[in-house]
Image (cartoon, rainbow, N blue to C red; front, side, top):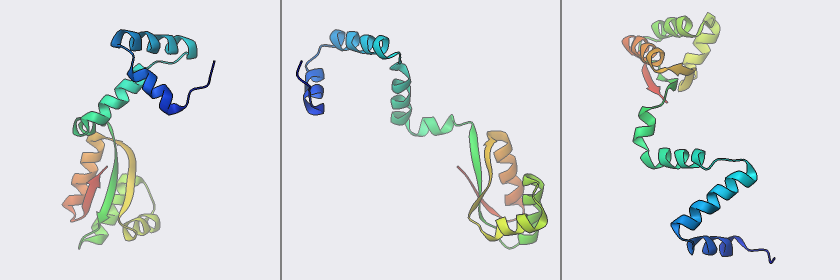
Length: 125
């Protein structure tokens, strides 16, 4: 059997009917022990864009700016991260900087609220 180039392979797939393509996918799943469903989920999530962002369950809390009350912001950063005074001050001085990674939505919102109450500018990623 002659080896097909990528372009030739894609052209051959384009000529298949929906039923033939479905059979091809099933055969590939069986042959290679993979599932095409995961790819479909990723493609659907990418197509939805904004809806996928709303379903996000882990957030990074980024301190953009400490604002005028830097000392109060340092205290909140110490409370939230458990860092010492020197480390928390360095983190605030290096803003914009992520201060908490992988926080739940509720925890991230709570941290953001505390920091904004002290005049800091915060983003959730």
